[in-house]
Length: 260
Image (cartoon, rainbow, N blue to C red; front, side, top):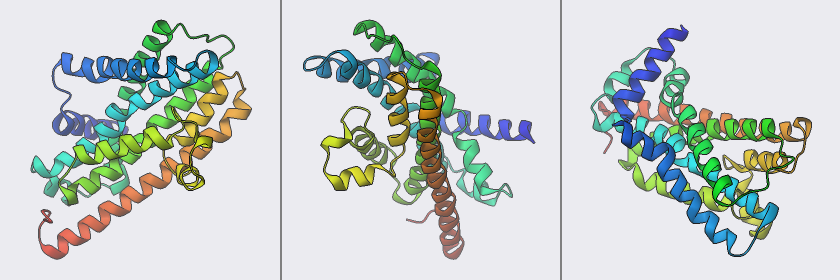
């Protein structure tokens, strides 16, 4: 069963997402994240240093996961319609949860690679003081963030089937995360309504856990934030399954997967 799931995941990744040439893969995993981080890092470095700069730079490194995880999962699902494979996918007897999970699996390690590249570049360029950091806590936080962002990408991918729009959804989601994740902008500076909205946004709790780990807090302190992030990601994944089923019901009613 695991081998069949892996085959399903790899086929979807190569056939629908299409990582392209090694150079294109390198751009998405290292070059684009590196330049994104340097942009935010230099802006913050003009007004802050020390722990504030460290948190902002590594927070920007977390947000570089947007492209390979959220964007990758969104494209993998969204391109089903354009590539003409959606009808076969909906006709598949595979459980919808497993089907969606296979569309997101390989994007998770891509996100971890992007974070590692961006964090390394940021640490070297800005000479961050990383003494006393709980690296296990940081790694766990980044992992749960990567998973929850992938779930969000799957949900938005279902939306893109209806709207016929991938890049606009990715752009809106990315900007929303820049503001509400707490990775760059401290949440306590936002309007109370925005702070409340942030509590159900993927990345928010994982970023908080990462900040605690950067301050040297132990796993017992960081783990509750992991659980909160996993909870948000699981809820988003369930919404994605529900959205796919609604899409299927409408397609069956209309007699076509092309709903527009």
